[in-house]
Length: 595
Image 1 (cartoon, rainbow, N blue to C red):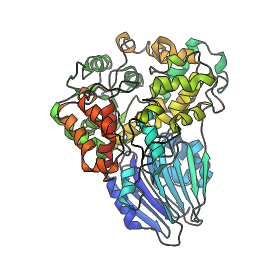
Image 2 (image 1 turned 30 degrees about the horizontal axis):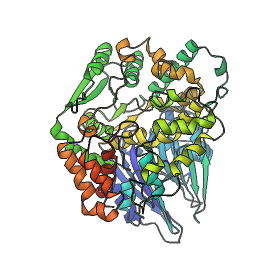
Image 3 (image 1 turned 90 degrees about the horizontal axis):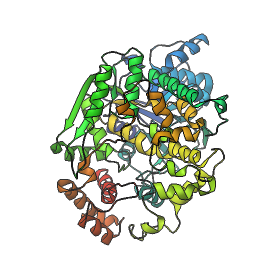
């Protein structure tokens, strides 16, 4: 993983290399092992490198292949780069490095924008063509790797983080009112292409964008599972036991793929089903001395702050080199402030500070980890999925809103100030449009498609990327292997909903894990001090929401803010999140970014 940045100009002027250098420097945490700049006329590229594959300088970026007339910057990992390299060598290509970046360059030359169809991995990239002046941007199928954009009539800039674009200057930092509506409805998720800032957009997942020298843009969306039983040949005839074996086999492949590295790979072990299953499969692959990591916090508000009993059980079962990381309360407040600054977009989940602190400690031991994110969206593990069983496609949006939305459109009128309140329910419209799209056999299929393609990308996936990369740690997510997601999308809903959710995955795990792990209550990264705001955390939020910056911006109805501050633990969203924290986090992020 790394951080990339760049600019292409449409006004006849040379690229602003100094601006690209500023953007690149902001991402030094993402790539602490090296940096580089390249420019040719209207195009400039910048890169910060985290050395994972080919640790030599031959893997440095921006990478230019003069013979092919291509220069590329790349963030991520192509897990099948060795197989692709062998195929390309058979077609006459010669390599000067052992990096996956060079494989990407040769693959782009061989297949053009269709190269993405050959990639198995997580990636964001930019490729500049010397002879045509064309720039191509690409993003992986599940949006695991970010790519932010800022464009006007004169130029397009892009970077792996939103703060990097701000460092380039010239960005419209006004609040996007549609994005604000989404933020307040979808637990801070702002779906692509928007962000909370008017002047910043995101390249959608599974998209290749071709930018011509005159600014003309063409997009190709190259992947979207249909979420139907007929999607995969033979799947409609599989028994429940055959589905269990198919899921386990594909997950095994996904975990094996993510061991590709020239450095050791560890596992973030929460003690839940998903991360425990990764450990079990790695042990089955013959991995010994595997480093695993778990984090815990002090209890607060009657809520336990760690799950060490479960992670210890799994570590003992498979003989891992296990690291318990207890976090003293004195570390939480500084870590929270640092985590907010590390967010490319405001993310309300208290998991962010947990991932931030965990990543800080893990990065002292390894540079790559596997993590269990994505399993709940892919295999229907959340509480809002069972109510959708048997619901008609026509009623899916209503049921989903009742179970998932933080609040209704009407309620927002008493929360947002009139300047920022929209007349239309744009969030409801977004969901209704997505759920009504062709494909998806059932209401649950349609909702799982929405959560996997949209909500997952801009919540847990982004959270893991931002918090791990703040310490130069690469996180890999086998449950988001695109072939596993395709298989899960075709799996009958009743098999996913069984056993309280993720039923087919639980059945697959019974041959590998202790029953205590499989049948335990669903857990999260618990950070009780943030779920139950008090003391210095309350003062931090109070200062953010009542200071001059917040009053000048005027996002929220002040009487509503005062009501939340008077009873900070009493007001919750539909899913039980702290309503005060949602408001406070947004202001904290805007102020941290100097907006």
